[in-house]
Length: 246
Ligand SMILES: Nc1ncnc2c1ncn2[C@@H]1O[C@H](COP(=O)(O)OP(=O)(O)O)[C@@H](O)[C@H]1O
Ligand SMILES: [Mg+2]
Image 1 (cartoon, helix red, strand yellow):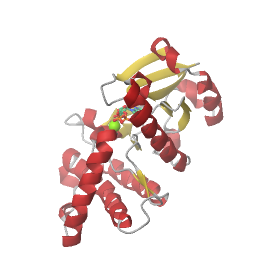
Image 2: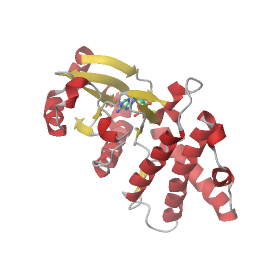
Image 3: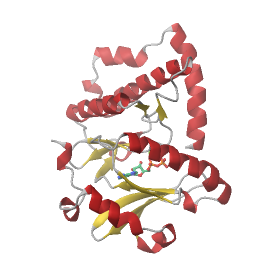
Image 4: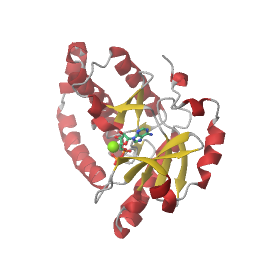
């Protein structure tokens, strides 16, 4: 199976990326409550509303902080939208990462809808094949090559199994870039986050297909050197900060 075979809806098949860009250009946040065709998640104090919007048969997911409280949406909300849009900008050509169509008013991201289910929804429901995890490894290598670490892959809802059997990764608000972390000792922390993205895959495999986890992967999952234990402490503190605001 190849990524080009992921077609969210028949109406999308004939439309190019540029057509979609133009279409969602007219979307306004104030109109979303009437124009939405589904809510994937209601807002909470620290979480945006996740809408599904449709325009002329085309669907997009809208991650919308405009429904959050004033202070939160104008500080953390804007910051996270900016961070996530920056990350999407670096992965425009990477299959397995939904396309960012646009940012509305600095408060919401309009992203290609992936038809499929996230790994949390699939827990105990179906066996995920080894081929999915192989493709996921390639996908992780793809964004690492572009200088990005996701940092939040251990959360199962951030990985999707597309209806085409292939992996997709969402939620880039906590991601970090190699460039920002290039100076010592941050470069070591960055390397640790790269490793963590792979550890997250092994964690998923342990949960979904434990029989397929190799001894090498088990060793990789459990390995801790002295300096790494120290870095773990720094990383965990950083992660807690990033997750608090994400
Ligand atoms: N592009 C997308 N296509 C399909 N579902 C998506 C998409 N983006 C997000 N979702 C769904 O919405 C959920 C929440 O989105 P996410 O970006 O992870 O928000 P949060 O930062 O609040 O965790 C995801 O776990 C996934 O199930
Ligand atoms: Mg998420």
